Length: 161
Length: 56
Image (cartoon, rainbow over all chains, first blue to last red; front, side, top):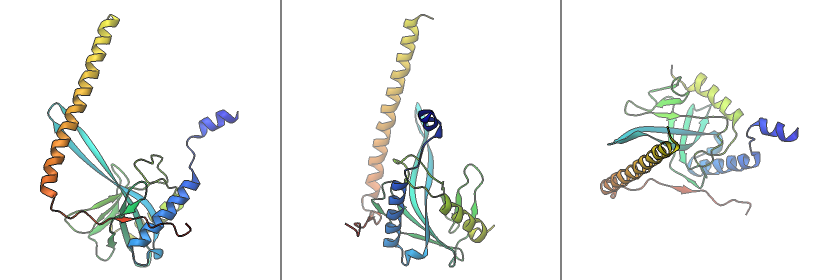
């Protein structure tokens, strides 16, 4: 009975690992963002899909970029910090202030990504989920409540349409 | 279809798969080297390692 209930329960989240990674995310974020504690954090990622055709071999390649996404409700600012799945380091932050961006919206298809256009030249698509199991590709963190809060902030107070 | 023919066909598919993979990595390596030639003077993006844990 115990064996079968465990078998059908599906993957379980290692909360100890998740909490340790949450702390690392906070340490990295606060290191590069001034007054980092004023931001709430989630883990997100970008997907860069490119097609290739090398003669008789063709297909598509997907590059995943891990991100620490911070948001501040009062200043209506989203800060994106690039990182790696093991959280051994991070890059420089990029600030998206609602007053300065061109537009922002929640995508519907092909993914429900959070799209921000800082200007006409480019955009960032942030994908975020409650938890992603693949530790080699994504940061191992459980973030159900934080993701709900971010989604609410983005749709109701940050999105421009 | 005799088992031998099925086996030969599967072997053929495996060989095509291996050659395809080798070709893919070969072209990727060449493209990477070409890209490196054009970006060698570019400054690498800033990277901040995780600060040591304060409790340690």
